[in-house]
Image (cartoon, rainbow, N blue to C red; front, top):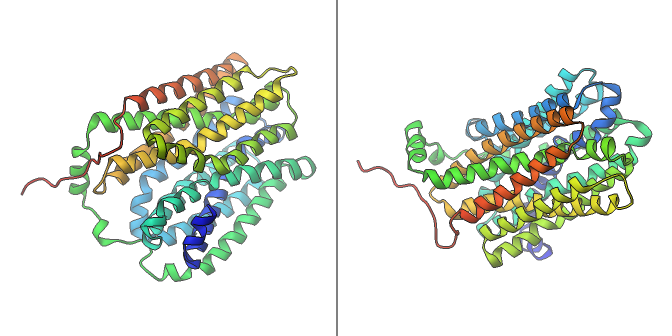
Length: 416
């Protein structure tokens, strides 16, 4: 990573660092802090685990809807404008959570934060395409996507330092203040990009007929397999994280500080897992790298469901945390990389957009199923069995997909 940062120019380096920080806060604070602090919130605002599943599903619903609109909004308002708008809204929503007093308000603010996550990621990819040279673009996007792990690690520190002394409302205030400072700095430093093209590319504004023709031309079986795999990714990975703290604190009876250490370990491993698993995938092909990542996710699910209130619980917590950290961040880097290898001529972005919707739908279903099975059975055991099944099914689908070497499914315009 050091050699990569030395190879980019100062202005490009600042953009990479800023964009990594954006991902850190919109995903780390906006999506993954709530499940980590939910038990403290439930003491003040009483709601069931089923309701928690509904709230968490609303976050994924916000992500899903905004994913479907992000491309059009980028073209309409400009990539940099959309990025800055999203980071400002993220700061305001985090501040709003300080004063929340009802489940409805809580769910609405978290839905907004879920929308900010996708509304900042899609235009970031567009800006990166314009300002970062091709030889550095893959490394840059890889570093940006790993920002989530930095956010999760920061969450663990805040949970250990701020939460026990000042409570969960102060936690949201601290994160909101941090994002507000980042937003103000970004408004100043990215001003020159706002005055440029802002991500608008007239050539890319494909007509409705052109989009329909592209969709029809896509190989249905291949795209269907990728969408099914991404749905299962959302189902397994998102529900695993959503209920981790509730499981460790409420069922395994760990203290909040020990539960926070699990998040810290996930974030710490995630800081390096994208690069490590990516390097492995470069050697064995990306498709096989995905299979390895899904098998490691299966290990995380087995370790999690095996945790019991006994002497080995912390060992199993650490195994589950390390395995999840290794697999989660790798999966969300390897899948788009696989799509970019298989599809060309603009089809990669189209398939990835569909995949993000499938991912969000999987997260919605996973959160709902996790919450209601906990209320029904009194345990999160069923949920982790389903996570294991989804991870193994993803590995099977990946094994059946074609290898990416020498393949690129492009778009051919119909004959006139």
